[in-house]
Length: 440
Ligand SMILES: NC(=O)c1ccc[n+]([C@@H]2O[C@H](COP(=O)([O-])OP(=O)(O)OC[C@H]3O[C@@H](n4cnc5c(N)ncnc54)[C@H](O)[C@@H]3O)[C@@H](O)[C@H]2O)c1
Image (cartoon, rainbow, N blue to C red; front, side, top):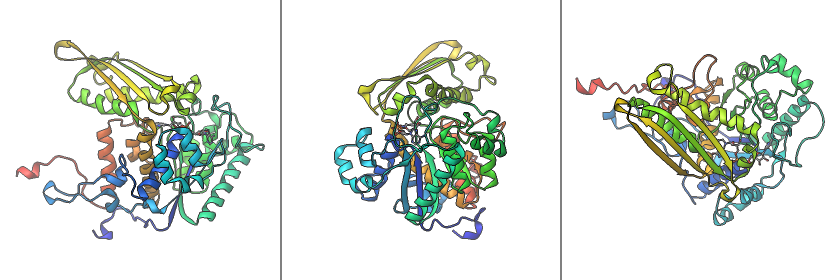
């Protein structure tokens, strides 16, 4: 395909891509160990669109379906270099063993790169994650001093590893629920707030600020606020940097966004949707705190209402009773179990029930999302795209959008949007699925 057709100038993915991760626990170690295993041919990158999916181009009769990674220039796994921060100083091999997600035999085969990777000292605030106490933190100074220390970490990482570009993705614990306040309204307010250590600025926002100031795209894998605030969106736009969030769409909400659009597509009603989970990893322990749970509850609840659109379909969805529970249950570790009971109704109002019992593995579902987000955010940066990247909604429970726009939660619409954005980048026809031309 000729370069001249492209709608945007796509800088090549030359050189190393630095991947900086605040929070190096279960998801991060499963992601990094997985990349190392795939590089060595030990396992396949299952669950990753950038590595496995194809994209149809042109008409169905043309037979053009390249792999996404052959269609747009993405960094390869060999080009990735990892670094990050945690409040615990254990290296990535110890952290992976602690997380208990991957088998000892798999970890044994990738132990060198994992053992060589040690987190940098974290910016942490007990008021934002109440259940964790870690010693490996930056002490003293204002929040602005902490942001500057993080920028110094980023510079040191970039020069030590000789990276050409860097992205940051939050895989740290979920912070307590908070909404944008006065200090988050403009960049000026935010910077003044950093200087006087305003309590409304969370640690994740200090990382995000440091990243954006350094020209580093930022994605938020957790449900808390971070870049979903006017001041940081302003900074991202001013600096021409892409941002994305919030909260990886994995276990139960992934199921919800598969099933709910299907029910709605057939105009079947919903009386109630009860979702409960048991999980026993550190994430579960953090979410046992009501403040952190509230952040998660908000993102989990919002998806269903926005898919069902009760305002448009009051007879079907006006009074849906929607409940979400997360129970910390240590024996399960990362092997979460999520139950859904859905009370639906059909023709003439006759009731029916659906039960889902998803015995999933949280970090196994999240790791490929981290990989895709890292590669796509870097692509967006090279394509000159800035601010909120709504085309990456596919990966999030609570997708960020432009102010006043409701987020699109239906996973199939999200996928179409993602693929059409890639087609648009390369000047290919967008696929509308009209298809009348086949019958002329
Ligand atoms: N696994 C999934 O399916 C999934 C889905 C959606 C969202 N998430 C979110 O991803 C995040 C990571 O999940 P996990 O299972 O890896 O949790 P985890 O507890 O294993 O890892 C989180 C790590 O973050 C560290 N941390 C906390 N605050 C920090 C800070 N300020 N700076 C640096 N490090 C900090 C903790 O010490 C911990 O090691 C959580 O917020 C979780 O809610 C996970």
